[in-house]
Image (tube, rainbow, N blue to C red; front, side, top):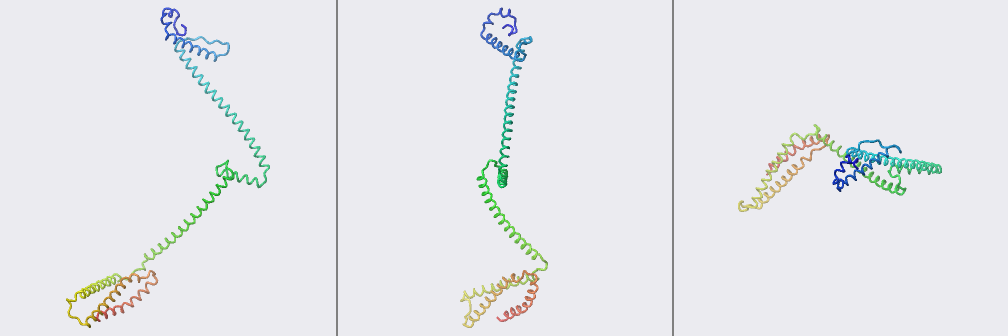
Length: 294
């Protein structure tokens, strides 16, 4: 006991109170157990019959030896776990090799007993299983997958045909638009030089006739301001009003349809221009004669 505490025995005899103290007794018992554990561990590391070499026994040495013993036991545990894991893996590999040999033997026997048609069917089934990533799938599952894929393929083909039809229609419309744009941008396709002037003249005449018509209507609504009219005067006025309305409608129709007379065909445009130029003198004479008639 004195040796465990690193103190001489006579010093303990000088302090009887310290020996019989419960705390000191517990510390001494714990230290004795630790030294017993360290001695047993050191004895296990030496060959049987060989004593432990003498060394200084103090608290620092005890702590160092305890730490070394615990670390050594932890390493031994890890080494034992690793050894067990290696043995288990080796057993599994040996079992897998035996299973592989058995499987290869069975496969060889099955393939040897199959006909050419059966071998082709087995190869096809294996390829389908590999493609579908389902090595354990049954033929019924493969059949359902085939039906589902066929339906998806039909829907995809229908969608592709519709998209192709839409693309052709868009291409046709684009070609028509490009052709129309080229026709409108062609320098040969131009309106008549005096188109703007004729349009303004027709609009001026229409406004003039519209104002005259409004004046005549106002006169008709105010009979008290008019002189005494006879039946012949009323007939002449009616005839004049009807003539003005007819002329107004003609001018309005001419103004509306003037823009539609131009042909979009550049080949027919010169011929229509010559025809309109030939009609121009007759139209001018007609307008002049109608102006003189009133």
